[in-house]
Length: 80
Image 1 (spheres, rainbow, N blue to C red):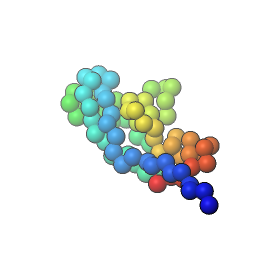
Image 2: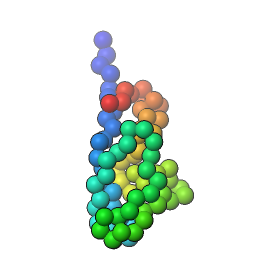
Image 3: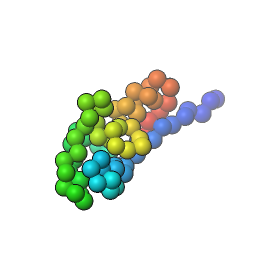
């Protein structure tokens, strides 16, 4: 029996502020996405660029749970 491959959804990600280049650790929501966030360091409001679905996809090295689910379904993977 073939073992199922699993793709994990991260619980926290490091978001790099586009204004001050400092890192912000944020919790990844299991449902939905984050469209704006105030940087803890420079207090600027980080907004989702029009070409991205959320700030997680735009300013981190990972994808948001929604995009991870779409990718996992396309590859036949299970999510955890």
